[in-house]
Structure formats: structure tokens, C-alpha cells
Image (cartoon, rainbow, N blue to C red; front, top):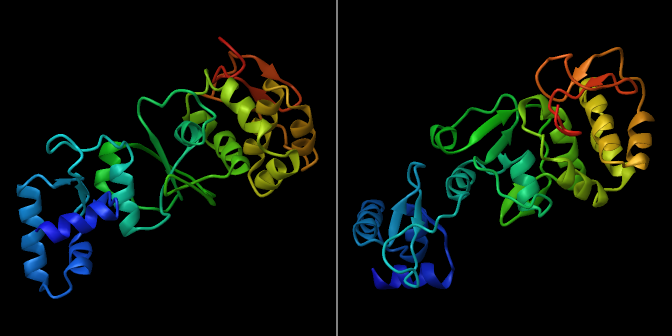
Length: 251
């Protein structure tokens, strides 16, 4: 076992499967590799992740057989099986990218609308499915939306999010995204998403971004909402948006 453990420590490996053991010891049969995996679990070098066949490696530098506490461990294990099928989204992505100063209490994943929900992910994270759901950047080895994609995602999912404390990090996000890039990320989105995005830029006093979004074309009569479908909220006539999600401040 020592050579397998040493190889995983040298690689700083986080996750281990039977295939990783075979990569280190190719002379082993599949059954022998599975036995080695079971033995590593018994000895405390590996801990179950909740994803079938995937285990967290506990390096020797850790005091005792305790998992790392990595909040993304289950997602990493699932991404090994289904690359890029899910990504940290909205507030979780804002925290990973450094815009939000606090980690969400319950991390959020986003996936395309027709993506099945793996049981382990559904038990660990809140998952929202929507289309489109692009994530063309990477942070800490995971797919995440680019800044313009993230802003468009927030506008698209706003009624299903808690955005009453989001204005600060949305402002920082917009500072990091050119108006034309934000407009490009919104070009093929629905009118409701574009309207909410326009409203969010105004709340953040991002006038150039608002102008770029307005130039995309008419948004229709609405009304649209940043939260629940309630008209008992501040109304922005330009965007036909009720701020029922209290983005601009206490409702």
C-alpha cells in the first residue's frame, strides 16, 4: 500500500477511484485494485464522498483520518464522472470568484434544464436547472461562469435566488465585466432576463451597462420580478420590473 499512498501524496490527489490505483499499479487485476481501495478505506487513507466509486484521499499531513472539509468534494467527484455537467452558480460562483465576501450557507449548483440530478449532488447542494447555463471559465479546477455569464445567470435565475444582500458583489462583478461583454452574454436570453439585468445594472449605478442592455432591443410589457410574483414592491418603469427580491434595499 505504501507505494500507492506515496504516489497519491506526490500528486496531491484529492479524489481516488479504482482507475487511479490501477494507474499506479498497472500489474494489479481489477479485483486486486478494488481490494486495495477497500484496504485504504479501512486504514483511513480514503474516505467516501457519497459518489459511487469515488473516495477522498486523506494525506499523511492531516492529523488522523478526517476528511478535508472541502465543500466542493462531492461536486468534484461527480465532475470526474460527468465533466462540466454542473457548475457552482450565482452566489456560490460569486464567492469563488472573490466578488462575494461570504460563503453561502448552502452552496448552489447550476445545470442545463435537461440534466439529471445525481442523488449525491441533490443531497449536498441546492441545484437549479435552467437554459442556457454556460460556464466557460475555471476556478479551483471547477467550471464557473465568466463574469458576464455570471451576471446573466443571476438575472436569469433571480426569482429563485436570495438577492437582498447582493448589490455590493453585483457592483464588483460589473466593475470586472465590460458593458459590451455583458450585453453579449444577454443577447440570446429571454426578455425577462434582459429586463432584470437592466434593472440590476441601474441598482448598481452601472449606467454604461444599462445602456448596452437597453440597446439589445425591446423587452415587452412585462411585468417582471426580481423575486416572488408580487406587485407590492418598488417598480422600475424603464425595465417593467418589480423589485420583489429587495435587491435595491429593504422592501
